[in-house]
Image (cartoon, rainbow, N blue to C red; front, side):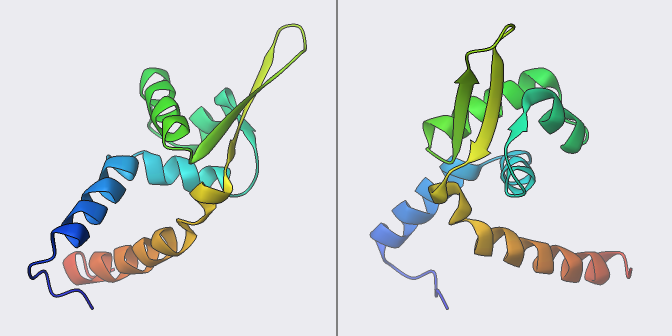
Length: 112
C-alpha cells in the first residue's frame, strides 16, 4: 500500500498515469474497445452521453499516449477503425478495480 510519503518518483509516475487517462471518458472508451475494434459511430453509441467532438478529442489523446490505435482502410469512403493497444490493455486491472470500487462507493453513498 502506498503511504503518500516523500517519494517524488512515485508522485511523478502517478501524475503521468493521470495525465494519460484523465477525465471521465478515456477509461470508458478503453473499456468499450476492450471487447474489440470499433468504428467512430459504434463508439459514440456505446459510450453513452459523449459528444462527437469530445470523442474525437479523447481518441486523439489516447492515440498519442499509445493506448488506442487508429487504422484507416482503403475503401470508398475510407473506413476508420479504433482498437485498444497492448499498452491500453495493461490498464485492465485498473479498470476492473475502479469497477469494484465504484460498486462499493455507490453502496456507501446511495445504499444501492
